[in-house]
Length: 424
RNA sequence: GGACAGAUGGCAGAGCGGUUGAAUGCACUGGUCUUGAAAACCAGCGUGGGUUUAUAGCCCACCCAGGGUUCGAAUCCCUGUCUGUCCGCCA
Image 1 (spheres, rainbow, N blue to C red):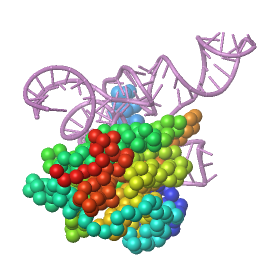
Image 2 (cartoon, chains in turn purple, blue):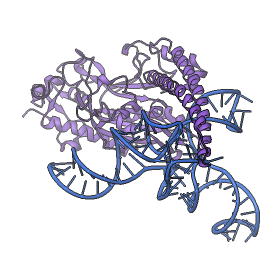
Image 3 (tube, rainbow, N blue to C red):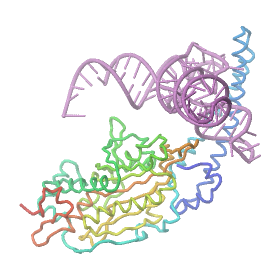
Image 4 (cartoon, helix red, strand yellow):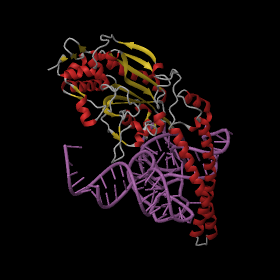
C-alpha cells in the first residue's frame, strides 16, 4: 500500500517506479479518483455538519418541550442528498483502494533493469564445485529406495513426494540444523505459527488480492494454507505499535508451504524441485524504517552461512526489475549448485519490503517520547528451502562408486552419527 | 457443533437515544510548593481524514469490524471477528 499524499506530491516518481515493472501510467487514474473522492467527501462533510447542527437544535427544543417539526422536515431533505453522496464516496474510496492494493511496491534504485531471471546480476559465488553432471536426485533417491513419487502420486496426484527412512530423516536434520543455527547464532526467535490463515493476513503480506490463484484454501472455513511462513511471521506485528527500543524483532519458523503452482504447468515437472507442498525455514525481521538496508545484508549473510556450513556451492544474485516480487523493494536470491542440471537453482529469496507490508497491516513504531508513529520496515528470507537443500545435498554429496550419499559434517549430529546413506 | 455473556482512550472502568470525543481512577507531560525528592494542588494529555502556507483555526469520522433503524446512535437491530463461561465432540 502507498501513502496517497506522496503520490499526490510526486506522481512522476511513482509512475517511473511502476514503469520499471512494465506498467503504464497509473497516477492519472489514481489522482482522478482521489480528487473526486475528496470533492465528494468535502461536500458530504458540509451536509453532515448542517445535519449535526440541526439535530442538536431539535434535541434542545425537545428538551424544553417545544415543537421541532419544522427543523425535522428540514433535516429530512438534507438526508436524501446525503444518502446519494455517501454511496458515491464509498464507491470511490473502494475503487481507489482496489487500485492501490493491486499495485506492486516501488523498487529500490539499486535494482538493475531487466526483463526476466536471465537479467539478474550475480554479486558473488562461493564454494568448490565437485560434481558437474550425472545422476539427479530422482535417480539417486529411487535407486536407494528412499524417494517415492509413485506412491505419493497414488494418494495425492502430481507434484507430491514421499521420503522414506534416512532420506526422511535427512530432511528433518536439515530443518533442525537451519533452525538451530538461526536461533543460536543469528538472533532469531523460533516460532511455531498457524499454517492456516485468514484473508486479511494474506492481504497484509501482499499475496492477496492479486495472487489468490496461487494459494490453496479450505472449503468449510475460508482459510488459506500458507504459501510461506513469511505470512504468519510478518503478521505477528500486524495492527501493533512497537516501542523503538524493542526493535528489531527477528522471527524464524520451520513450516510446510503450500502452493497451487497454477501457471507453472510444464515447469520443473521432474523430481521434487517444484511441489505443491514443501518445507522451508523462514526468517522475518521487523526493523526501524532507516535500518532495513543493513538488515537486508545481514539476513543475506545468515542464509549464506547455513549453505557455507553445509559446504554447498552457491551464487548470489540481485534480482532484476522484471524478476523482483510484488512486495519487494529489492531481492537477493541465493542459488545452489545442482550438478545434474549443471546450473545454479534458487534455494533462498531474501527481500526488503520497506514499509509496503507494514502499511497494509498497520504495523508501526513509536520513538521514545515522540507523539507520532512511523511504519516499520519488514524483511523476509528463506533460511533456506528444505526440500531444495535436500536435493542439493543428494546431488552434491553423491558417491557414484556405490550410489550412496555422504552426510555433510554439520548434519552428522542430527543423523545419529552415520557417515553415509547407502542402499540396504 | 450447541447455549449464554462480553468487547469503550496507554491501562482500569462509568455511560440515560439528544451540546458525550466520551465521567472517574491510574499512568504520562508541564507548572506551583520544596534545598532536593515525595505528597498535595493547578493545567494538559487519543487517532485518522477534509480544508489550509500552517504541527493555527474550522469541519467530518472513529467507543471491535461492516451494514441498518432514527431528525439524532457508544447506547436500538442484523451480520461477522475475537474473548470468557457451560455443554457436546476430540489429538
